[in-house]
Image 1 (cartoon, rainbow, N blue to C red):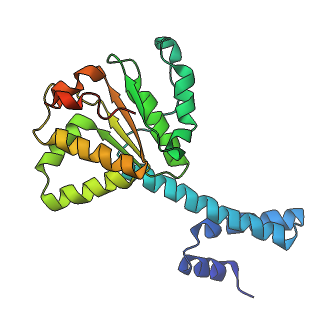
Image 2 (cartoon, rainbow, N blue to C red; image 1 turned 60 degrees about the horizontal axis):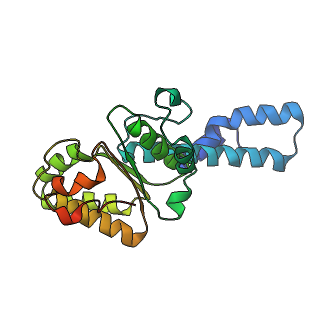
Image 3 (cartoon, helix red, strand yellow; image 1 turned 180 degrees about the vertical axis):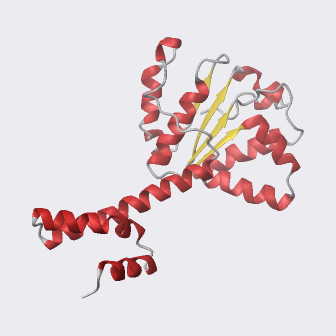
Length: 223
């Protein structure tokens, strides 16, 4: 029979960090409560699953582009009573992602659009969805500076994710020359794949064609 240190070395080799970190606690717990082996073993396996899920969530958060872990529970709804609270909580259920639907949050600056979008995005990550969050105008300018290979790889990541958040679309009065075409391609590709998009903007949809330099595209990225 192996000793605890020997078992821990084996667990390290097998990359079972969740089991290794809780092994001694589970052994003492089983001894103290006289637990059946299968019950103890089930708890040990659950420790490993919990650790892997936690790591997956953290990895997807780091890859998402989100800079904070916001929730709707901490949102001050009294600040702007006109916000469609029920609709926001419906989005928070993530049913729209399963349905391949989109959402737009359009309103004046400082009304909480970004907080709501980030909270929904973080909720999606907690449910194992792949998320990409972009501060849109800043991304337009940085994307234009990338080499073609980098652009293509980044575009593929953005197209393939389960939920894309385009935050503060058209915040600046001017966007790079190719940004309109890039945006149209992105939305079209995600529409074909039934992948969801959340757009926040303080510009009314009727004016979007002006910012895209193409009046025929006014409102194109709409749900």
